[in-house]
Length: 373
Image (cartoon, rainbow, N blue to C red):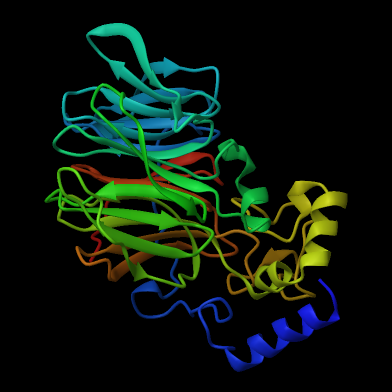
């Protein structure tokens, strides 16, 4: 970027300094910081790489962790059963109305597991491009399947690079119940992460991590209508959404936005040199976990005091689960602050035993039995 490019950018930031891409909204109201996520109960042994969790019709849950999909059942979900193991990381999950389990597999596409048939059915491409970076999947009550790909051609483990390069190559794809007739419904999305269908089946909700927003699209039997932004300029990077069982939604924000990261996103020369010359773990970028390495980027001395991470420090990583009502308004939230234990929340689902939360940064599943407003 030349001199005039820098000058124009600075002028825009002064004129529109409270605009959506400049001002990070504070955590207040229903999003006020608390320690409720740290008070949740850890479910069983650690699950490194845990990514998604969904409720099964029989009251159990399915969870993806690394290359495996597990079924957890019984009191406190103490019983674990291996459902499937893939040659790529398992991510987004959904239960189809006909009972099949749908799994997003890194580098491969979408797999359908039929309990009555050992042979997997795959959706591996759409519009001539392989589906290597699927993040989330949802099944409509009529059998249609919708999946989101964060960045065309990039696997999910490259999420940080895609966000920092500010690319918009994500896609929303629909296919039939047999995983055939794949159609690209939306292109050029800014790292879409979560997708869910409303309880009445009349709308589709979509999160875009790179644009910090949540959108809703009217949905008919054959057409996806014009979308509207329900929540823009979120204080963090939105992940997956799952129903709360009462018409609302559970939304995981896997990292907080910070002023330091926002500043680096505007400084193209610095950011490009940082990504070229430094290991990815030490980038000034969103993180699922942090605070244990002295080489991590910090903001002067405002992070630790006497070796203790300050809860109010600018967070290297953060844990945040938001409860939304049927209209997408935040009504409650669970936090694990900068000095907390359970960061990198990528998904949560409602069960008869309570809300089960996937804290990927901590590598574990959590059970919250308290009330969510």
